[in-house]
Length: 90
Image 1 (cartoon, helix red, strand yellow):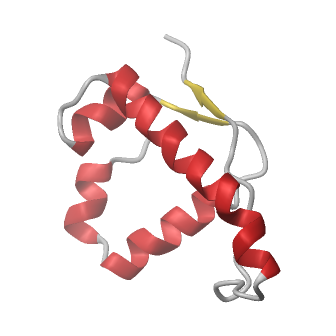
Image 2: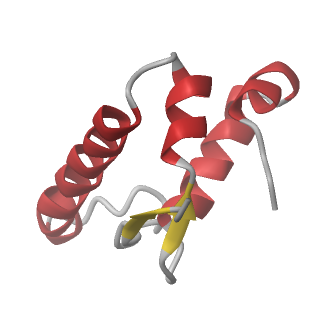
Image 3: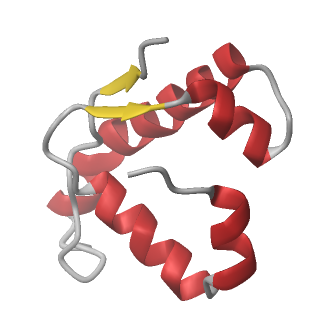
């Protein structure tokens, strides 16, 4: 499946984008993404930098998962381990 963030921003509501993010974070298998394409569509940055930023975001979620779930704040019951981030092979 070849999806585009640029097209999604034009045709999807913020709630749709949020649902996509939730589905992505609920992924249980390795997620392969094209870091070059993602960086270009998100703002034209460097692919390695974009991948690093994604890693930092997923680490932040992992590091705070136990704190949020132990306090009883389950955010509507949607707490999932971030997926293994493996860039698509060229």
